[in-house]
Amino acid sequence: MCRLLGYVARRPTSVVDVLGEDEFEAFTALTAVHGDGWGMAWQDPDDHTIRRRTSASSATQDPAYSRLAHQSLGRAGMLHLRWATPGLPVTPENTHPFVEDGYAFAHNGHISPVDRLEGLLTERSRAALRGTTDSERYFRFVLQHVADRGDDADGLRQALGVLVQHFPRASLNALLLTPTHMFGVHINSRAPAPVEGLQELFADDDEIPPRHTDDYFAMDFRVTPDAVHVISSGIDPEGWTPVPEDTATAVDLATLERTRLDL
Figure 1 (spheres, rainbow, N blue to C red):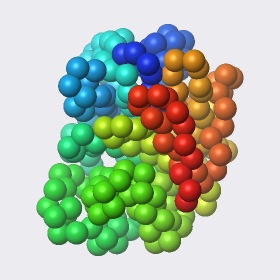
Figure 2: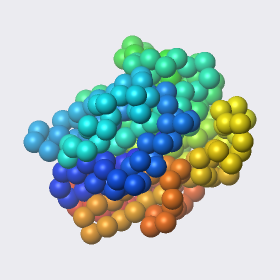
Figure 3: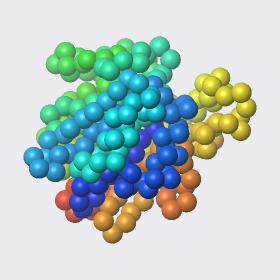
Figure 4: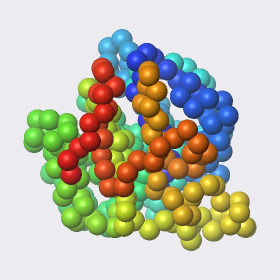
């Protein structure tokens, strides 16, 4: 259960350009909870392939994190700070974003039981698995339906419909970067916040990061003339607009046009 940042812009940009130095430092400080690895994925501005850098170390302990965050890597990308679900190892294979054939995916939530989720995968999807997380299985399930439908939006919509039926109390919050769109999924209205886990990390509830106990799975967005940004809760929400509950939205990489998916 993690933190997400996604962006689509008219020109190559950096994570620090998206947030500004102060908000970037505030977001990075969330490693006090979300310190079980980090990852970035972005669409290369030259050949449009997906590039990725991940680490099973905390972002604050890896110099590559800050270095990449200050580089204008691409016009579209995502950042993920991981808080590992108990029982799921902190390993490179379990670190988001997951990437496959021009698609990148990062998840904030937990889908349980994992073996039931894996049971929804085809033999081919199971053979492609590299780690043990529910999140990677979620990604493979989405890719199955994208391939089946021949369309990113239709495939994602179909996959979400099945997952909501099978796992109604799961958080399906996620970012999906495709060759043409960035999709933001905010489906979590019946998912419980991990309050007990947070209280185990801090001696005093006042030390818990903002909005983690009462608005843990919230997502906010911000639209400027040159970009669209989306972020998980945890930093000052001033200037950001809440994403409506149980919705998914597509952002066109070429035009920045936003389209709500009919779920």
